[in-house]
Amino acid sequence: MSKNLVELMADLREDEALDLIKSQIEDGTNPREILEDCKEAMQIIGDRFEAGEYFLPELMLSGEMINDVMEIIKPHLKDEEEDEKLGTIVLGTVKGDIHDIGKDIVAFMLDINGFEVYDIGVDVSVQEFIDKIEEVDPDIVALSGFLTTVFDKMKDTIDAIKSEGLREDVKIMIGGGPIDDQIREYTGADAFGDDAMEAVAIAKKWMGE
Ligand code: B12
View: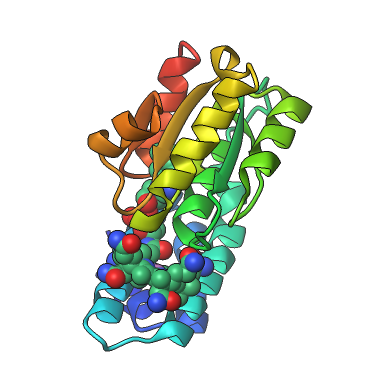
């Protein structure tokens, strides 16, 4: 755990943070520890936004920073052997919602844990989900959403998966800021997760790992 990295990232001092991460990797720090620091920093950034200390440009900057961090550490998190994928996942943020930082972390963690992830982006319509499911025949569909206003879109998406006759073929998980078990029940999803590690744990369980 590096307090320094958390501070640099929370203060959006990206160049210094990236330099520190590079040297940590050279020194043999576990990349997962670096990810934990990133998560803590993002939490602080969110808190500062809510407290009126940060505004939209800072949040956008934090999104770019996390992408740059991931570019650096991703190759070091890959399993040694590029073995068979554990399963296929279609992931997207539902219609009306453009939050993608959390979804990107989920995509990244599923990817490095051995899943084939089709990340279809943000503001994804019901039809776009259906089209992708029909195209790639996934084992799992993962819906992300951060706004209370998009719970209905999650439900619509899952209802459409049912009415298209695809529900029996996929497990569905949901997640994002306000998602809890009540929302899971309302939307008809099979599971919800609080963070990317839970997404991985759920997916592995479903694939019999
Ligand atoms: C960053 C941010 C933004 C950025 C998004 C940038 C981006 N590229 O994503 C911008 C500035 C664009 C933005 C816009 C808006 N935002 Co905003 N935003 C946030 C903020 C500060 C942080 C969210 C975030 O990315 N956190 C970082 C991630 C990493 O944290 P995390 O949640 O722990 O992530 C994990 C889980 O979510 C989980 N997860 C995510 N997806 C999935 C999927 C599955 C399947 C699973 C299992 C798990 C999972 O795994 C993630 C990784 O571990 C939150 C406040 C907060 N503190 O959460 C508000 C917040 C989410 N936003 C909010 C609002 C209201 C808005 C706007 C409507 C503001 C406005 N008036 O314009 C717009 C909406 C735009 C839209 N149509 O979507 C509200 C939502 C309130 C509500 N309950 O509905 C919040 C809660 C702020 C607040 N307190 O009011 N926002």
